[in-house]
Length: 145
Image (cartoon, rainbow, N blue to C red; front, top):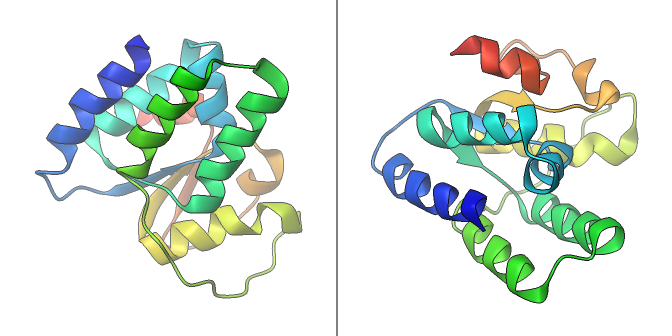
């Protein structure tokens, strides 16, 4: 719950500033919530210095993976859902083609939400190239600061 409390404090700060938008992929969220480490530091950095954006698809994927693989308490899932709902932005979907079609929603979300950075550990998403979006690993994201 400490990570959620920190996110809540940071989201209040971030809503008052116009910053570069960052889309944090579900694999980074899950890793940060469950294991901490570099992924947690990336989430904290994103909340502290950028405007974090998310879609319903990403939020659903985070919830699904946590339930399926880690069996968190209902209380944790509910707190996470409430917090992440505060940064969720609904989008319409343009069609794009990337190496793994299952990851298409991440790229579409970044484009539609105007994210300048995607933080991901997914090798297929890391190959995506777009002039307006920087795609980085969690470790690379920490080095951007």
